[in-house]
Each structure stands twice: as structure tokens, then as C-alpha cells.
Length: 181
Image 1 (spheres, rainbow, N blue to C red):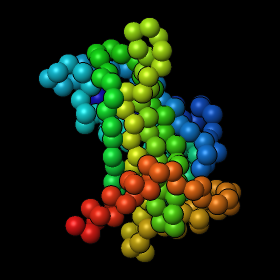
Image 2 (image 1 turned 60 degrees about the vertical axis):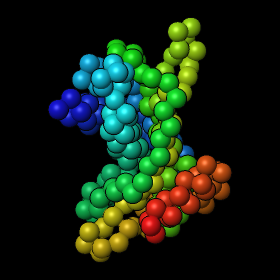
Image 3 (image 1 turned 90 degrees about the vertical axis):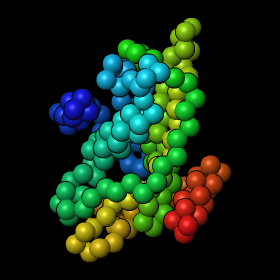
């Protein structure tokens, strides 16, 4: 239930925050670890990271202006895969940031990087977790994923996709292997 409060807050506050210019604009959301986010080890539950990442992607869609086109066409954002590396635990009541950005896209898919940042005991910024997620925008009516270039053109972006980094190439290769297997 607590995630609904975070979602409602995001929906109510996004119009007061600066707009993002997709695809290069990055979303930054601030959170705190609450008792209902904890697992039996008394740190943030690994599943909670993935759920909070949904909010980062929603923020990208909302503040990037893509939501208008998605809603108008009755499309749906769909996540098809994710990989996450946990590096440092997030403890009760600790504040942290989630940064989300699109790092690569192909004709039908996006790859987004989502990074959880916190402060260590001396106040130095650390990466608590880092993830890559793959998804796209799906048209149920047409029964296919929407062409990314079409979506970007609708919001005014006509540039080329960046070259994928080595970790993105590896992630996409593993995704394809899992898809076939």
C-alpha cells in the first residue's frame, strides 16, 4: 500500500518539477527507507528496489512529455527484462536518490539505467545499486511495440541512438539468450 502513496505523490508533484528533455534528460527522485521497505535483515528489501525503479521510469515518461502521446494512443509501457547489482545496503530511515535515464534504444526497445545513490558514513556519495532495464511501448490495438523513432518524433526528438556501452551490449545479449531459452 505504501507504494501507492509514493505513486500518488509522484503524480501530484511531477508538474511542479522541471521538465525533462528526452531522451537525454535524467530523472532524479529522492526517497527514504521506511520500516515497511525492510526485509528480515533490516535493510531495504531487494524487491523494493525493483518496485521503486517503476517510479523512476514513470517520472521519465511524465516529465519527458511522453505520457500525453502514450495516453492519447492508449499505449502501455512494458518492461521486458532487468538486471540489477546490489552494492551497498540501504538502512532504515536512510535517505537516497534514484536516478533514471535512457541510455540506448533500438527500433522497438529502450534500455534505461537506474542508479540508487546514498551517502556513506563520512558523507561521500556511493552507489547502493545499479540496474539496466529493457522495455518498450506496446500498442494492444495493433498488437506490436511502437517504433521508438515515431514516439521520439512526436515529442520533437529526431536524433540518432547513442552507441551502446559494453554493459548494455552484454545485457541485451543475455536478454536475447533468455528469450530463446
